[in-house]
Image 1 (spheres, rainbow, N blue to C red):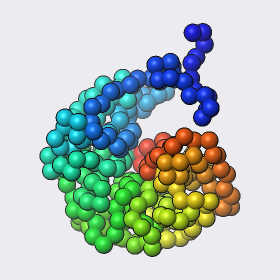
Image 2 (image 1 turned 90 degrees about the horizontal axis):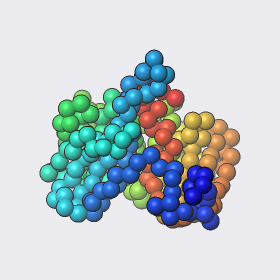
Image 3 (image 1 turned 90 degrees about the vertical axis):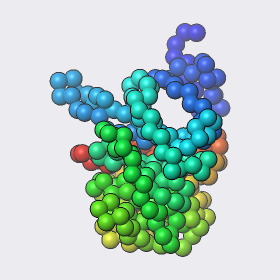
Length: 274
């Protein structure tokens, strides 16, 4: 067929084997494959480009008796390393994931332990779960500190002391979260149409943004706007955190996410940030 074959919107989704706007595809056989997060590469000043960028994901089931974390070459889609974590044997595996500025992977069992996998050595460490607060969503701030969130609240993990500092929310314990790289973690308070802004130093709420409906996935764009995607539905909202203006798009098809979807997490966690 002449020209580039690619989908243009909800009313024009081409077949998988016709779609050409795709760099590579890596088939996986896991029964559950959830988190996905990019890791920084190295800057090549001579070519003015990034090199050796990597992608983390994890899966379980479908032949893998326990959870596995994969480190994938971002350019080719080739698996560089597979890290088996036999302690995580819940059938779902690692539920959410994020990456710090050194390229290390942080993941959560759903409401349970926090897992760190070293990018260089592929060694992993299991940390205790937060107590008395939900841990559904996960993010890493610009200082490399992991956060877990749920129910309108969030908890920041201190790796040195293996303790959490927590703001307990008022909702049910689900919802995604993302830091803006400027000192605020944004989180969705289920089941309300409210985005809660939590200060990343004090771990206290500093702002609330009212939106038309609950959003499961939260992300930040490169203009500082907060984005939210409704729960396996059709709508996405873009919110200006300064003015409170909400823009809506209602042409999605069963969209489902609970973590970064703009790519800003990689920038906010890396150096320089923003």
